[in-house]
Length: 218
Image (cartoon, rainbow, N blue to C red):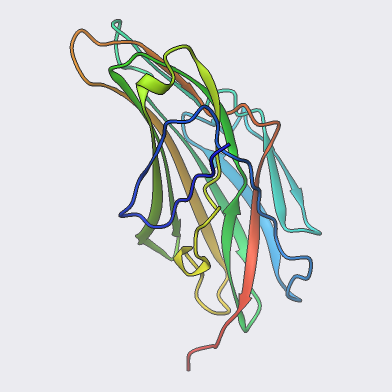
C-alpha cells in the first residue's frame, strides 16, 4: 500500500492507487489540568444533526462519530443534485492558561465508482470561531480512471502534516474549533458521465484534541 502525504494547502494529492495506508492519530495520554472537550456537534447535508451519532470520551478528549450514512455524493446524466456533500464538526474546547489546542481527525475510509470522465475530490478545512476568516485546508483528488470498476480507499489527513500547519487556538483561550469536510464529483464533458463517492465506510470516525504549551502574550 502507498502512503498519502498531505502537507500544505498549496499542494494537492491524487489517489491513483486502490487504497491508502491507515494511520490514526490520538490525543496525548497526559492532558493539561483544567482542559476539557465540552461538546461536539455535526452539521451539513453529509451528516445532518439528527443522523450522526457522537459519543464523547472525556478521559481522552476524543469524540467517536458513527452513522455518517449521508456522507456520499452522486453524479449522472439525470442531474447534479447530489454532486457535493459536506460534513462539519464543531468542537467546544476549554483551554487552561499556558496551553493551546488543535483538532485531529482519524482516517476516512470509503468507496468510489467513477467513469473515466468523472473526478472526485475530498477537501478538509479547519478554522476557529474566534477567527473564522483564517482557514487552512487540504485537498485530495480521485481520478476516474483508477475507480472504473469500483474500489475502496482510505484517506489519512494527518499523516505527514506538520503540527505547525494545524490551526492552533490562541494561548490560554477557550474556543470552538471547526472542521469542514467536503466531497464532490465533477464531470469533465457532456453528456454527464456517472460516479458515486462514499466517505463513510470506516467503523467510526474520531475527532480528538491535541495540546501544546505556549507563552501567554502580555
